[in-house]
Amino acid sequence: MTVRALVMSVVVLLAVILLLPTVRAYVNQTGELRALRADVAEAQATRDALEVELGRWDDQAYVIAQARDRLSYVMPGERSWRVVDPDTVVDDLDPETGQVVTDGPVDVAGHVGAPWYTSLWRSVQLAGEQPEPGSASPTGGVQTPPPASDTPTDPATPSG
Image 1 (cartoon, rainbow, N blue to C red):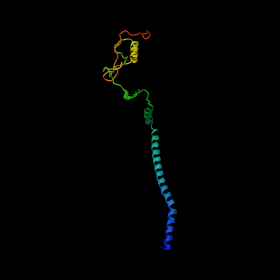
Image 2: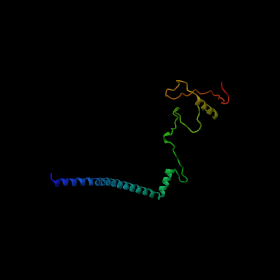
Image 3: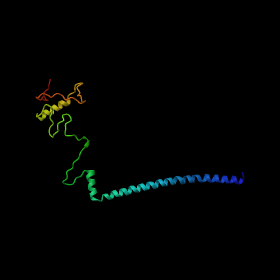
Image 4: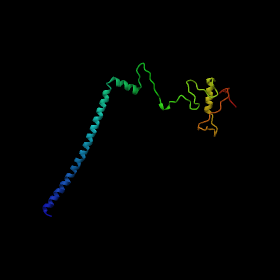
């Protein structure tokens, strides 16, 4: 190997060592610049969409529609209907008896036509009764207790 080749290889090695960090920084900064330009383009698209949305609020019909949808406002003379939970809307048939459910008081079995306080007291008694062990109905529900006597018990009178 000649001296000339040796000097040339040292110069090339020195140039690589000096230029490598600069080239690496250039490549990293180019990638960051590309990512930042993409972020700017996305921000501009978002800004344009928001400006369009802001422009919609200048239209009176859009404002009225938003007041109806978001705030449940109605125009004077209109009637508002709201379904609280459409999944819990019950049918017009009683699942236990199969009879049509009507508006008005609910009759407790055995007390049709009795005064309201008798039906109320019977309802309280039914709610407080413990089912007997092994008395579950075949459908898995609780058996209905036998109807009480026609004479209502006075809640103030102790029984026993």
